[in-house]
Length: 110
Image 1 (cartoon, helix red, strand yellow):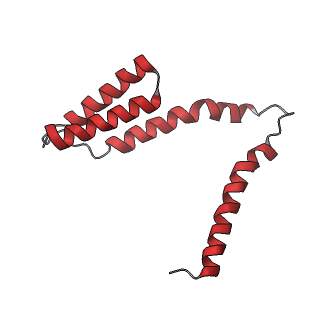
Image 2 (cartoon, helix red, strand yellow; image 1 turned 45 degrees about the vertical axis):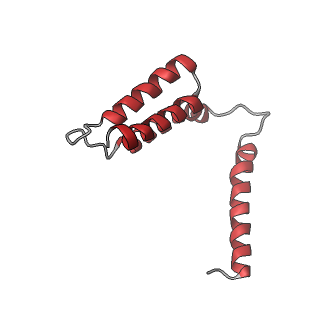
């Protein structure tokens, strides 16, 4: 259990860390100077790399040789891809895919 001074120092440290991470990019890359090519490259590629990492993380423990043979995961991923392809709404795609997956594992593939 933290004492009151320890809690205050923890909150102050978290607030300071948040402020530094929010304000530092504006100090390092001011608006009147062009953004370096490497940073622009990272801005274009990191979102896709992050999504790929999340997909691998979510599917890492899938057992394709044991019932239900990864069917809930395959169905959910297919619905996410198709829904996103037609609607172009990430929140909708991920939300519907998550709800579908939970429905499948709790009610269909029991």
